[in-house]
Image (cartoon, rainbow, N blue to C red; front, top):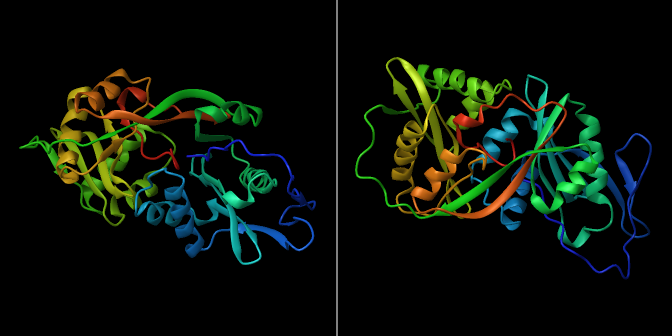
Length: 313
């Protein structure tokens, strides 16, 4: 998810960043020290999640375990001395597709060009054929100027769901490293063909994550996962062949939520996904614009009842 820029007073105007050729070090003006841009350390990666929580994005508590482990070089920060001033991620998948997220500048440093300098550096470091992002609707014009094209809306639904009394007998829990986990990764590739099998493995194994699969005969017909987040529990992904399968997976995951606030992010273009969220009394609480620079991946949106995350697609 990308940060929302609030209107700000223009006087006095703070000094802006001027980057040297080649990137890396910038000058913020007398007494402020140099701005250095480089990969995030593990400690800074944890701080990125804390910043995302402060922005109200409700990140999963263990999301960075999967994100950073999958592509540590994809997380970039701007530093003023020893302090983090801004962050961004452009995570690359083996297919040549990337996803941009966690674009945040520290509130007291906004309006100085730090975020733009970091944005430019991140995209220069990752000259990928295609990059996606989920941005707040109000920022669509800014991302369009950077070459990103609107694809569809993703809407976050939230609320409390009464845990179902029983779950479908075709639902099975997914143990990390199991043959079922490998089968789920193969199914996932049919829905989101970007080469993310290693990420799926890490996602299933992340602390606090609970993943389930819907089986039909010997085949996987869908899968989903739920994890603790800042404000409750988040489902993502929720992929299924049809609405009935998605409902069975949702019900199994709602049991794990056990009455706590529950959130899921369906693409608005999938009417059945929206209907599933609304049927359980969930209401829209936030939305983003999915945008791509370069060719969009062949995402099978008819089988997407909840995206994985706003940060990695």
